[in-house]
Length: 459
Image (cartoon, rainbow, N blue to C red; front, side, top):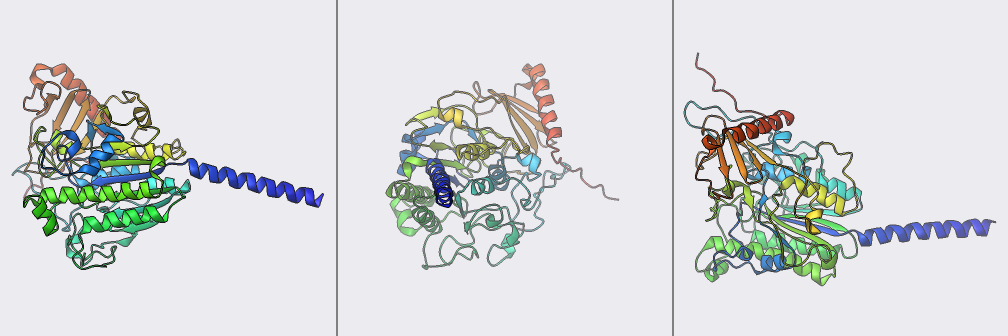
């Protein structure tokens, strides 16, 4: 009987181990690459400037799905990053603008107009995190690149550290390389003056280093399910690139930065292919907001609630799930990554009530639309260099309604008829405008959105 019992225990353990091992094999690896300040029109695959050299993004696009109406959750970086990680909107997070590098650096608005709404200076530790969920599902996780969710005042530091307890390793990432309070690098070249990156070769370019670290992480995790969040600092200002790459791009440093960013993507794809992991890996390429260098065929730029501030390039590749060379025109946004990643990994989000995103997998599998009737934005902040700021916006189909807080009157645009958002047609469609405004206001109330503050009167 003892031998029989022992055999049963061994068999049960073996079956359990085999089942667990098979489950790990079946789980897709997940790689999430997010550029910084990269607008549509600055990648090869969208048929833009022939001088742009991004063959690896072209390679990614040919192996997956291009999203032609991808949006960031905000028109500036920190809130979009928080929305991606948590699956919650910036309004719900009360983190609606970039965390300032200079402490207390509120942007002034026009004379007599409201002050900016209050916005968090870090991402609270008790918020949801897709990295925590994936780690709980057996994934080894790494964060490499720009975090910008760990406190204000990074410019005053020597190494980008304001408060270490808000660094990526406290949100479910096993590894953190580069993630601190910086919103832009102190130095693009080694020595980096960043406490979360070990200097190794003087003059080494930051984007190259991050790509190399990402590739090394992939090679070390061969045979194990892994998640990699690679958020390069590129192509954020200041515009700097290696001299030889600038010369190769006709003296244009911005094009050189794009090529370097693309090279980092190539390092990741090469590592996936070399290790045999490519066929079982979901790869996302995205950007945190519209470009600081405008997109020719979109209105405005980073910081704006017009399309040029919110639209971003996006490609998703997942062999065996997404057909090669496909496209989707369905509007998608930052909060959608959380449920997509967790569900793809075999997990559930039913108990996470805070989530505001949708699982994108139906689109990957050929469905044309998601069950969502509108997207929303809340940016109660000043950005006087752009046209539409200090406001909230709703997008329903092709109709986009802007609710202003003093700097601009309310506006209604039809993106199909007027993609450059030149003509405010609110006067022609008052009932539609009223309905969209009410819908937007209901969402603002539901999310407990922080509102602009009235100017203090002098006594």
